Amino acid sequence: MSFKPQILNHGDAARAWARERQGTGLRVGFVPTMGALHAGHLSLVAAARRECDATIASVFVNPTQFAPHEDFARYPRDLEADVALLAQAGCDAVFTPTADEIYPAGFCTTVDVGPVARVLEGAARPTHFVGVATVVLKLLHLTHADLAYFGRKDYQQTVVVQRLVADLNVPCGVRVCPIVREADGLAMSSRNRYLSGEDRARAVSLSAGLRAAEALVQRGERDAGALRGAVERELSAAGVEHDYIELVADGSVTPVETLAGPSTLLVAARLGGVRLIDNAQLDPAARDPKDHGEVGPPC
Ligand code: AMP
Image (cartoon, rainbow, N blue to C red; front, side):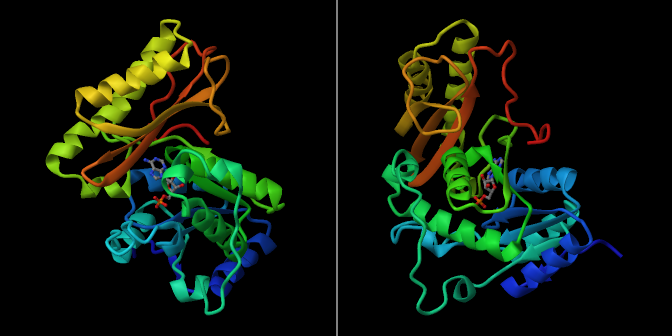
């Protein structure tokens, strides 16, 4: 008989599942997702399986991280397909809470992580990170995980989560895993399926721009303006308007004007109503081009 993950519909069941394993000395890894799974999500499961003894993923489309005009209602949902993919990936359990469990009547506590949540994505989506931080904290409590796995694709989210876990003494380690890309370089995202054929072709300009900036760094460029310009050129050649292009010190959202240490170049753009984000780590000391996001080494 083929392997099937255990489906846990309620937080009590998820916590009991984790505690049972932790009671016998096993380490529980957790992969939070909103479903519509792709190889990027599955790379997080693979990373959790490498490091932990038992792996639980959640599938929950969190309403509070969507603004009223955003795509919550049409966000792709296919739990059966997600569970099949998680089974193939060897995930041991899937936590599928309802919105009523996560946000019961009377719910009113939220988590505001502060300045790191207000810039970049937070400026474009002012309520987004409050929703993210609140649900992540709840999911970490409910799954009682030892380690939680997040994708670098959502770079600012990893900064927010690390801040949250540190500030609120959450007893869970945070792992950040490489970006998984399509063959042509586009960062995988559940939202890529919204792109029209034409926009899908133009969307490659984000990763192409980041690669162009990396090539400049290899040739010795250290000026943030020049690196941002490389991304901007690729986008405008494809007729794509950006929301922001920013170079920040790695692990933070603090802009830098000179590439003097490990940094991350971030880009956000909108194509036909679909918001896409991507980023690349740039390191002036690195001799070889960075890993471009294959399902790669452990986080
Ligand atoms: P989501 O379902 O979009 O909330 O994403 C769940 C997790 O998967 C987040 O930690 C994302 O950063 C991560 N993720 C999404 N896309 C990718 C990707 N292309 N590569 C690596 N991780 C990803």
